Length: 160
Image (cartoon, rainbow, N blue to C red; front, top):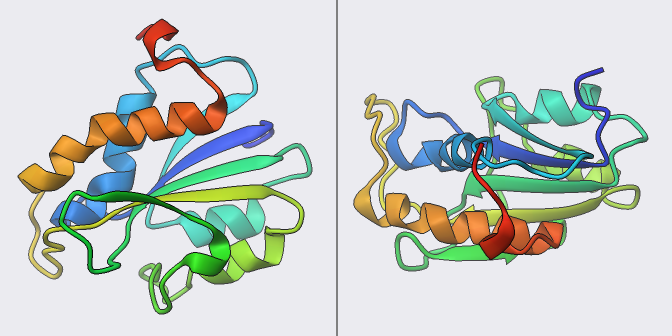
């Protein structure tokens, strides 16, 4: 199965709605690096709850989620969240599934870290493909944060 990895890095969000595409964009950039075995990067788009509910198996020990999260910080700010720290009412996909529910269901079995970026603008319902400048500039630091979580020396990893 595709998700039989010890560590999954999952980019969540909708690339059609400006800064909501932060997670998928970081996943896209991470996929350009030669990561050690046992680590898989996935652009889950808006299907993250389905992914977490149905596709994880017992081989997954670590889950790093990347998403835009509004916690009223300066746009482009990054922060690590535990499942219990996630702002209420966030993470609804097109089917009104919340991401925090499945995360709470698995948090005792899987080490979960959420790396959130404060959006400047989520354009929904208007389609805007580009991230705002503030969020675009946060991508390299988000990659460093993922590497730190993975225990990878950023200076020694090669792009493929």
